[in-house]
Image 1 (cartoon, rainbow, N blue to C red):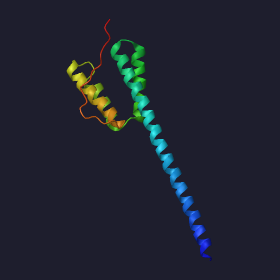
Image 2 (tube, helix red, strand yellow):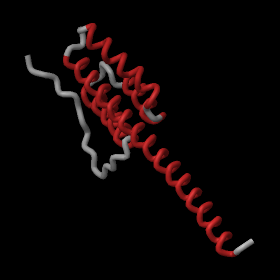
Image 3 (tube, rainbow, N blue to C red):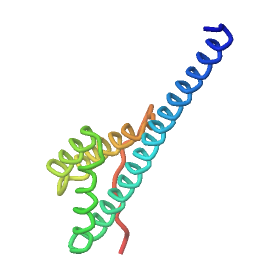
Image 4 (cartoon, rainbow, N blue to C red):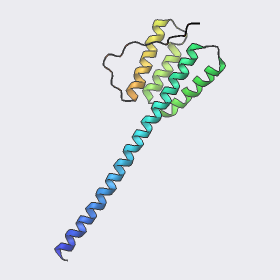
Length: 132
């Protein structure tokens, strides 16, 4: 076989392999970014529902929205976020402010960690109720 033909054949095969690997990596990166965006949207929806629930505890629509947002998180959230969310519901809801704020802060930190947001000195947070 002629060397120039062999070199051309190796070059064509290399180009095909590089393009396949490039397409695969681009697709993988696209899926990762789409998943992260979806998680972000669900976390925002969850926190909005939590806020609305805290603002009007007796409103059935707020409870319904919270449960719906919470159930969506079971599909997309990390295990750590789900664990912190369940712990928050079990140990913080209906408790005194200090205990509630501690568990809420842990939940939000887990969400931020899942979104790859780095925190050095994240403060303790709380839900602020509207004055009536």
